[in-house]
Image (tube, rainbow, N blue to C red; front, side, top):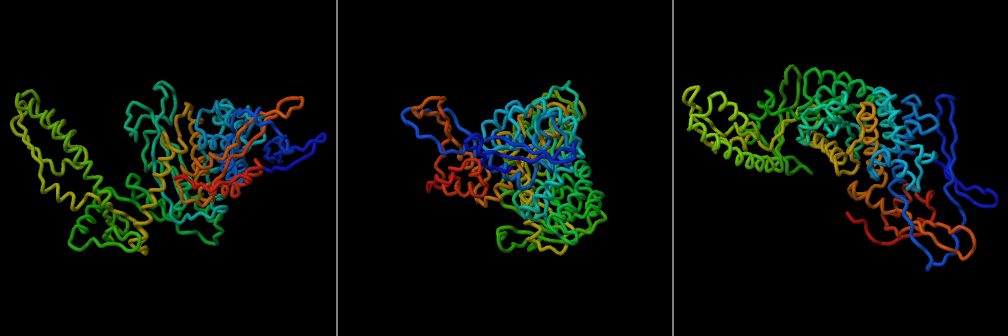
Length: 570
C-alpha cells in the first residue's frame, strides 16, 4: 500500500493506492482511496469538544505491514487462480482481512466490514462493505485444497527470504477444534473423533501444523477429518512437504539441498513413513511410544547403574542415555531423556487416578460379595478402572471363584510402583537418524515441539488468534477459515520477530492495540459541519519503536510526536 498526498480543488488530501493483479485481464489494476484531509487540524474550543469513538492503529497496522512485506495478497491470488467476488475483494484480500480480524478482534464474518471500517490502516482500497460473509463463503466453495497448499508454500518461501527464518529443524503436531455443527449437516471434515477437549458429543475438525524452529512461524498446515490419525495426515502432506523443502531452499538462496529434520511425537510413527520422509528430503526425530519394543530396550539400558548422565550447558539439569539400535529394519540412534518436571506431573496424575480407582474398586467389592455380578462383567469393569495412568502396572487384582459367583482381591504393590517411577516415569525415548548429532542437540531439537504446542494454545478458545467460535458448516468454508486463522498466527509470529521484543506475543499485541486514535468532534466557531479530528495517544518507548518498525506514521502522521517513558507491562 502506497500513501501519498494530492491537492484537489485547492484542498490537500492523503490518498492510499494499491495495485492488485487481475487474472481476467492479465495485468495489474490500480485502486485508490481517500484517507482524509492532510491540512493541519483546525483550532478548536476544548470546552466544546466531545469524544465520539476510537480507531485501531497499532495492531492492525503492524499485521498489515507484515502482509505487505510478504506481498500476501498477490501470493494467494496467484496460487488460487485469481478467485474473488465479482466486483469485490479477491481471495487474497479476503483471507488477509479475516486473518487480521482473528488476531485483533475475533468475531464472525458478518462483523468483518465493521472491523475494517473501525481501523485507520487499510487492508484494501475497497470499502469495508465489500467484505461480507457471503463473499467469503462463495469464494471458499471455489478454491481447492491444492490451491491453498500452493499458497502456503509460496508464503513460507517469502517468509524465509524476507525474515531470515531458521528452517533446519521443523516441528510437526496435530490438534482438533470443537464445532457445533448439527449431526444431520453433511460434511467430510467435521467428524466425531478423539477430541482434545474430551467433548465426545461434538464434531471436531483436525489440524496438522508444521512450524519453524525460530519465531514459531507456521510453514505448512493440513485440515483433515476429525476422526483421522496423525500418521494419515502426515502421509497426506508428503507432496506438500517435498514442495516446501524445495521452496525453502530457494528462499534461503541455497545452491544445494538443505538437511532438514522433522520433529514429531509418537502418534506419527511408521517404518514406511520414515522411508517416505527420507525420500522427501527430511531427517526424522520422533518420540517413540514407550510400549514399542525398541523403546523398552532403551529403557532397560537406561535403568542400569551409571547409564543416565547429565548434559552440559543450558541442559545441565537434564540427564540422558544414548544407544544405537535397530528399530524394525531401520538403523536409529535412541536417546532416553529424563525430565523431573514430567516426572512430577505424572506422579501427581497417578496419585489422583489411584485415589479414584480405590473408590471404584471398593464399590466393586460389594456386588462381588453379594454375588450380583458375573466374572465377565467384573473383568470388563476392572479393565476400565485400571486403564489410566499406568495403574495396571502396580495395582494387583486377583479374581477367584467361578463364572457366576466370582471373588475379588486387590492391593497396591508399592515396590512395583517405585520401580515404575525409577525406570519409566518422567522419561522419553527419542529416535532419530541424525547419528552425528550430539545428545544435547537431539534433546534441544525435540524441545522445539513446544513451538507447535504454543501455537495451538494461541489458536484454542480464549487464545490470541482463536480458531473458534467458527460459524462455518461447509467443508470449503472450514478449510478457508482455518487457512485464514493459521495466516493470522503467521502474521503475529513475524510481527514479534520484526519488533524484536522479548515479551510474549499476547503482551506485544496488547501493547500494539494501545496505539489507537481517539475521534473527537469539536467546533471552530465558524459555519458548516463540525469537524471530527483524530487525537494520538501517549506512547511508551516500546510503542514508539513499533511505530517506526511498522511505519504506522504513514497512516497517522502525528503518532511520532507522542511519547512517554512508561515501560511495557508483561
